[in-house]
Image (cartoon, helix red, strand yellow):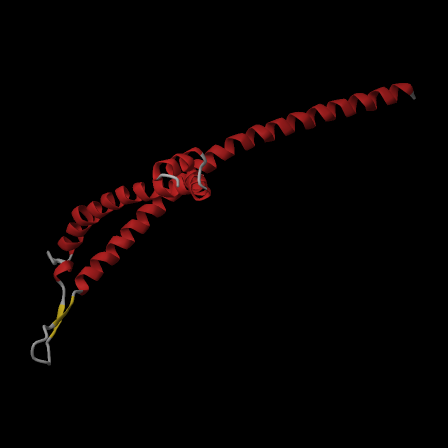
Length: 155
């Protein structure tokens, strides 16, 4: 009968199909990209949350007279003894909606800037291609003129 250590040695020598498939899965670019995106997204969320809580909301609060959204709530009294009243904290919902709008706007602006940068990068090679095409057309015209002139001389 084989010992557990002997079985382990055999498994480690010859990679188990599930382990092999798992390695391939992890090493795919999309999985790694997703992991990086999640980490960056978490860090970005902290930044945007701070932007909303520490910059945007104080300005909005000042505009509306120092009112704090997060404290807005409605309490529904309990009609049955022994049950606590229900509290609907709609202020937190308003805060979350504002957070969403700010995050969406910041992401929109970032994508817009990235798209502009990509357009500028793609415009430059196009100019080079256009100039090369013009140069080739000019050369073809010169060659055609030379052929025409040589044909005229032969007549």
